Length: 127
Image (cartoon, rainbow, N blue to C red; front, top):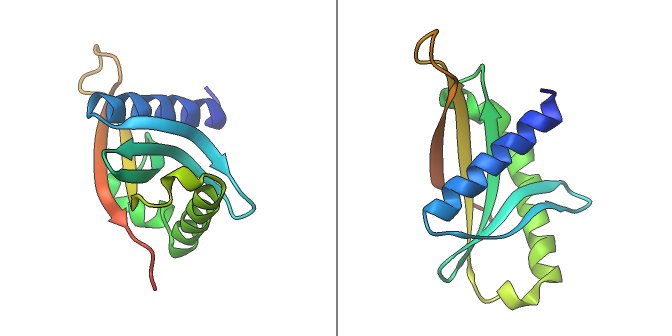
């Protein structure tokens, strides 16, 4: 499985996890000149921009490296672009979440089981 396929599989797992938790996925892979947002979801009266990190080697403690200040800025700017293009969501509260997926092997004879961690309000826009 190449990197793109692993990323897609991670986004699929994250979307399923969020939907099971009651969120509604609006769109996937929003792109702008600034970057990309993996998932955009609705949680009641809140629009949620979700970054998915699917790692098999690094743990959640390394998330600070995968979600640098520059990466957060790119997500925020892409969220602004999305809201400008989709005015029906402009009156909603905004939240930035991270879904971290880590593949773990509990024992040699068992298949890889994903571990999903949903970090609600993982970061916010700095003013």
